[in-house]
Length: 233
Image (cartoon, rainbow, N blue to C red; front, side, top):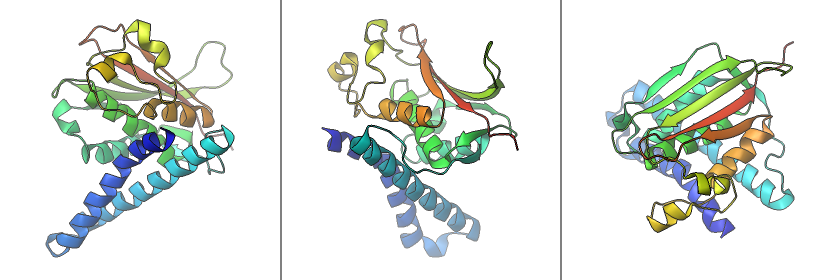
């Protein structure tokens, strides 16, 4: 089961890599320099995501801890969001949802860009999967200071207007290899690993992930990721 579910998580970056390399191979002479560079960059980012996912999952399987020796740096949030949107669009028709993004240029988190993209791609893919084909999807980020907290943090919110999470099934959401009975009964595809992997990554970067949902279809779900700012020098 573990290997089968990990294979599902590797499918998105693998498909992106396949599509970009096919374009470079079969249409290389018709591509402009800018288009060629764009496809090469997508291929490179997909390879980085594959490496990050493999390192994270294999380390978790071996030690029970999600992140091994992964370098943390200051990661521009808007760039990570835009890259995640581009990668997700290659797999699902994200643009049909009239995606609304509100992320300021100056925001940065302390973490790993490839792993942050993995979290965002998972959340955006889920938002698509559980929504009507043209229902809006929103992604926003801002700096917050919680009452009683010692330092501010960046909060990322991904909102859909889809099925929502039934309250009596919410406890299953971040459990590894668990799927909501509703999804199994309705044949909605999934691995039961995606959100568990997101939680593993976010917590390893010093953050938290949670969700808000009434469980009413059409009201949707908001996933809320809080991550630390880069350290001050």
